[in-house]
Image (tube, rainbow, N blue to C red; front, top):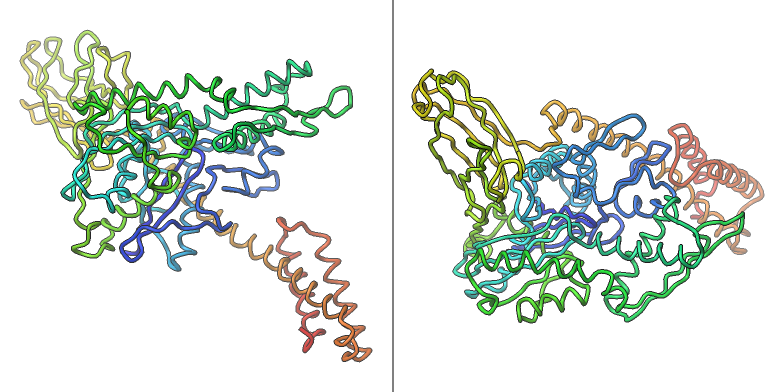
Length: 586
């Protein structure tokens, strides 16, 4: 097995790491950055952009640029672009494919295996959708692990003393909290809680709404009707949030944000940290509920915690840090980079699964024991939700329970699989259903039907039902509610591979133009050098000038990011002639 990469597939940014010399290392992307924006864009000329390139052009391509797709995982979301529908796993796979390519460039070999992290509070459908995204991206997902657990693994490498820690993970779109016991080479999750709709995006949205509302009050102009203007405000809101993490105030300056009666209108206003804290106060306070829930489920008080570990970029907000202090009475730790520690932990787990960890090392000895975040059960008579596996049960696990028929002489039963904590089925999430047929007719209460739940190490659920009287058996592996069939996934894989090939061709054409452009500058420098010019005879000068002029003309007819096959061939041929004409000079 080759190297196994660890991927933190984030709402706002993603990060990839790999184990080297028994230590996890973050892989820089093709732009030289340690994290990659989780943004995908489709340009009108058919190009697909991922990461920083997609984020940069968002304001001028709002309807074809996708942010925070992680929040749609496990849903029936479909985005229509140029007549084609894309599911959330398909769009996520484009981010994963870029991370895979960056890792391959760094490692110097093909990468096929990965460990991918998800929020601890992700449902079964969301976990399955993440696996599907990996598969479409050409990755064999060896393990799905929870983000707080992954961060704890990165932390536990260097802090093996026995202690209970609380991982407070506030990312771009989700919030998780886990109480974890570390020590004796064991990382055991005691309890987890969270909110899949709370994160940095919500803080950005509050700033955006504040700015737009203030602008309307000052200028009587509603920017909400202008998609491009709104995207610019969102981008500025995110920047303002980051500035206010270290400064007491910031200035929002957006020239030409819109026009009124043909005249440009600018946005310029100040935002103080105090104002930011006020408009996001309820978001910060919402994090206390899952923290208290996790502590209660773990059966401990905050005073018993040895440490509180901050994870996720949103934990840089000072008000968030202060809230953690208030809830736990502890000074939170900043020992690990909150943007990178989840990917680092995933790389350690990947190294373990891939056999890359040196035997006898601390990393080799660590055992992970995670839990299922929500209770699982089935619907029974009266619409009651009957739990079979309680939340915070250690995984992998298997549990069976005997049920019977509600009506006399039933020959089939419908098994509705539920996830959640409420008493009634209608209030929980239906994550799957199937029918067990061939039950031997008998009075109500006589047949014995054994329902078994299996949860694997990825947190993915398989449910089976068996009539103990006839031996009839039926099972279901819960799949994402986006409901991508195997054939649809295979089709998405083929399209991704074809697109990758097209990308390679397009890059080769662009590289041809770029190389010619570099050659032009080299030759122009030679022609500007009096001594070198004297060394040339008149025939060579004429040939160089003619070839130089022609190459520049061809380059001027193209754009740096859009070169056709014919244009690339013509430019390459002309550049070769220029290189020959300038032989001995460069």
